[in-house]
Amino acid sequence: MENLIKKAAEQLAKAKSVVALTGAGVSVESGIPPFRGKGGLWEKIDPMEFAHIDSFMRDPAKVWNILIREMKDIVDKAKPNDAHNGLARLEELGILRTVITQNVDGLHQMAGNTDVIEFHGNFAWQKCLDCNKKTETFRISLDEIPPKCECGGILRPDCVFFGEIINPQHLLRSRKAAYECDIMLVVGTSALVQPAAYIPVTAKESGAVVIEINPESTPLTGSISDYIIKGNAGKVMKAIVSEVERIK
Ligand code: OAD
Image 1 (tube, rainbow, N blue to C red):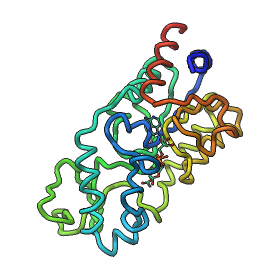
Image 2: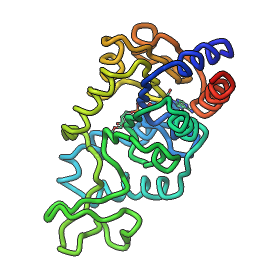
Image 3: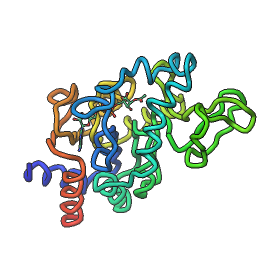
Image 4: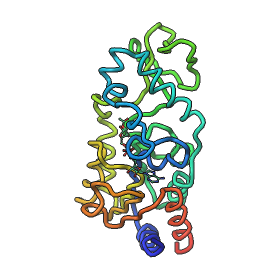
C-alpha cells in the first residue's frame, strides 16, 4: 500500500487538473453511516419505502420520522475528517480543482473546498413543496412532523430522492470536469448509483488516470481504476497529502 500511495502522490504532484468524486465512504469516519454494506442505512430501512419521492409524497410524516429526523441528528453533529481535510489541502496546494460529491452533508465545504458540486443536492436546506421557499435545516423545529414552511406548505430536504432527476446544471458541470481532468480521485463510493457512477468512466474515456480509494472492490475496480488503494479514506488521504507535500 505504501508503494501505491507514493505512486499516486507522484501523479498528483505533477497533475494540472484533478477532480475528486466522493461518496458516503468519505464521511464514515465523521460518524455518518454509509448506505450499503456493513452498518449501511439501506440494511436497516428499505430505500424504496423511505427514500423514494413517491413514498415522501404519499406520507411525508413517515419519511420525516424514520429517515430525515435521524439524518438531521447525525449531520448536525458531523465534522470533517482527514479525508475531507486532505482534499481541502490538495485544493490549497493548487492540485485539486473540483469535488463532485454524492454526499449531502456539506463536509467538503466545511473542510475548505471551494468548488463542490453537490450532485445529489444538500441537506443544509429544506424546500417548501408549495411555495419553493428554502429554509436552513438547523432553523427547523421538529415539534411538528412534517415541519412546515411559514406559508403552511410541507418542507422537504433539498436533496434528490430516488425517482427524481439530477439537477441538469450539476450533470453538465460534472461531465465537463470529468472530460477536462487529468486525474480523477474516486473516494468512498460503491459506484452503484447512476448517473454518478458514470463520471469516472467519462474521465477515463477522455484520458484521465483514475485513482480509487476504498476498502472494498467496486464495479470500477479492475476495469476503470488505474490505481486501487484499499483502505479507509481518512488514513489514505492523509498519507497521500503528506507525500505530495514532501515531493512538491
Ligand atoms: P454507498 O453506501 O453505496 O457506498 C459507500 C462506499 O464507501 C462503499 O464502497 C464502502 O466500501 C466505502 N467505504 C466504507 N467505509 C469507508 C471508509 N472509511 N473510507 C473509504 N471508503 C469507505 O455510498 P455511495 O456510493 O455514496 O443517493 O452511494 C451513492 C448514493 O446511493 C448516495 O448518494 C445515496 C444512496 O442511495 C441518494 O440518496 C440519492
